[in-house]
Structure formats: structure tokens, C-alpha cells
Length: 65
Image 1 (cartoon, rainbow, N blue to C red):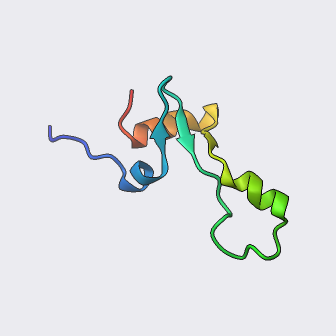
Image 2 (cartoon, rainbow, N blue to C red):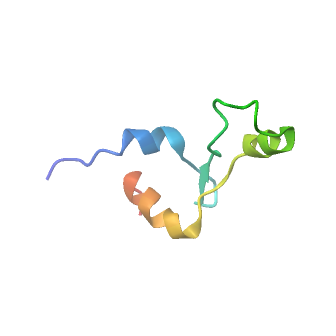
Image 3 (cartoon, rainbow, N blue to C red):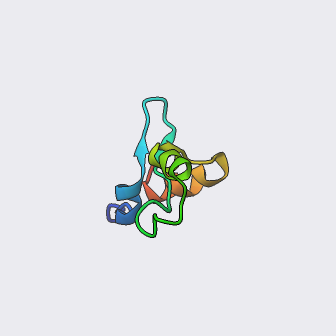
């Protein structure tokens, strides 16, 4: 069986923390920013963790067990 390749889109979007959790960035911060409040844009700047419900799916895409 050949080696499995990771999903390159997931590889670019997620990173793994030291404790094994998956880090992600917030969406909706790339364009059409004039109608969004300063507070909302500031809160979208910070990175966060992937939800537990989605962690299995992301780990499968990154080929992590």
C-alpha cells in the first residue's frame, strides 16, 4: 500500500499544539471589513482551538492518530 498524503488544504490551515490539540484561525477576516465593528475584527484576529466535535475529522485529514 502506498504512503498516504495529507490534505494540503488542512495542512495549511491547522497546526498542532504541544499538548496535541489542534489550533485554527477565525474565518471572516479577509474582506468586506468596513461593515464589521472594530471589536468584532479584533476578536477574529486571535487563534483558537478546533472544537472537540470536529477534531476527529481534522486529525484524519492531517493523518494524525
